[in-house]
Length: 465
Ligand code: 4AD
Ligand code: MG
View 1 (cartoon, rainbow, N blue to C red):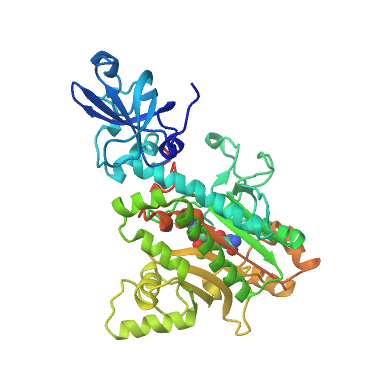
View 2: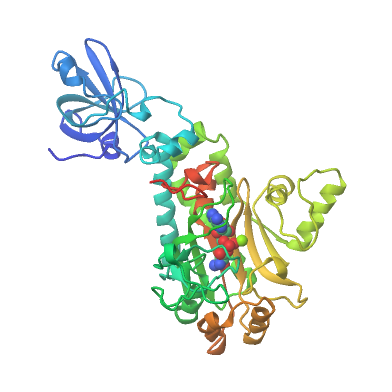
């Protein structure tokens, strides 16, 4: 018989007709007369209840049906007699696809910690929490593609292997086929890459932005959406060594339009979750973060604050003067610590903040320099619970100014020639941003550790699975 997915079976009103469902057993309970199997196939957070009349099945037949086992159940769909579900299936035929020894199956127990579940990341998608998270992750990817497609952006694929360091932070993983056991160095201690696979030193990309800018100078509006790699040794609940980033790049827009885009885009994604993932959100709201749904609704319905960095520092210093204690000092010119960002977002304004016009020394070389020559047109979005969720900026389009900045920072020019050509041939004002996909996921799911919103996290000293 053809399989019905459980999400459809639960909505069906085809009563008293045969139906077949297949999935993994979440639990089995009962007595000598009747057994109840809760079955889940991943299509929804909700299980379907299979009712087993024990006058028709032997104990022996039901014995392999334990938590974690995989079965095919055929039966008659009926309105449920019990509370908690609309329909159930009266079992007529049972096939066991795969058993799961109760003495060994790690998801036997309820209430396992997220830390423990990370050590069994190959099985954790079978829990309610992680199946909900990964269904939402899929939905967020669909929301992102839909948003850009509907707004006339082209999905542009930028390379993962690169010879340039976009953010200039030197946090790149090298890519080489050189024999590390037999590395030759020249008289200056330098490695000769000319005989390496690409004939030069290459790394995994930290951002698709530079190539994205080239594309925007031809297609007008583009976005990238792909894996990004950073070898920053930060063991925090907000950093991954491999994360996914969405980077739109748009010709002919200025700072205000960039901020409009950031705000509109992120609200669209959050609203998508509210419109399409309510069953999963309700589960997470109940078991992971009681304020989740309310927070999502509030972000969709409020206007973000737009705050120049200098004004932000003034507010923070005023708070300090009034007795607020922070771990780190807050002086103009410093990068804000996440405690500062969270104070502004969560305590002072109580809503998302787009912070603008940062000191140029703490930002990347490509940002457009303001007339004051001290600040640049960055536009980061700071979110409650998360801190920085988006990093964006207007780009410096003047070849002279960009060259001066590259020189001042000692960025190797020869690797940048192709990027500079965009400023040489038909330069245009343009701007863009990068959204950390897993930071968005943290916000939308209410999970508190970034390792728990990506299927197989890569962090310092961890690359299991
Ligand atoms: O602020 P970042 O470094 O900006 C860029 O890479 C720009 N090239 C983007 C652009 O303008 N096209 O990173 C952008 C975002 C951050 O705001 C954060 O959400 C996320 O990427 N991010 C990380 N997420 C997880 N783990 C990490 N190690 C991350 N580093 C940055
Ligand atoms: Mg940033």
